[in-house]
Image 1 (cartoon, rainbow, N blue to C red):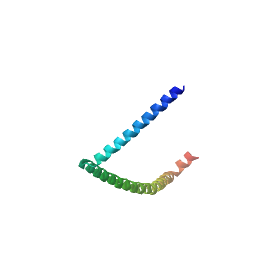
Image 2 (image 1 turned 90 degrees about the vertical axis):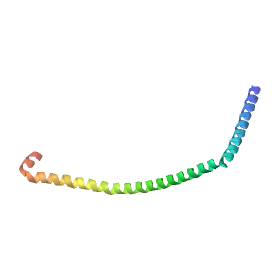
Image 3 (image 1 turned 120 degrees about the horizontal axis):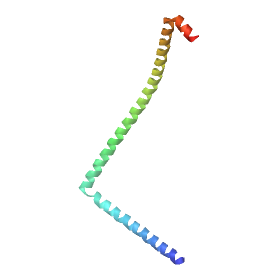
Image 4 (image 1 turned 45 degrees about the horizontal axis):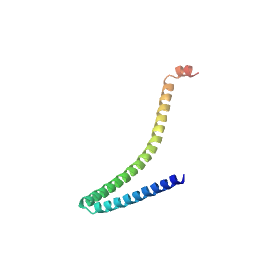
Length: 106
């Protein structure tokens, strides 16, 4: 039993060391790559794209707020206008043929 635990501990420690070494190598490669002209150009363009995306997102948020405000105003206006039209048409029909309508609604 203890032998198994020792092996498990040994392999776990070995894998952790490998991971640490690989992370260090990756960090060195990234630093070396960042020094090249191609990498500088890439990061410059990436930064420009992020700035453009941020500006677009800000404009979208502004338009969304304006759209919501317009829909609130328009929604109440449409509901009110629809109600007025329905009442107007109903009254027009009732006044056009009052006797027939009286018999139908009675």
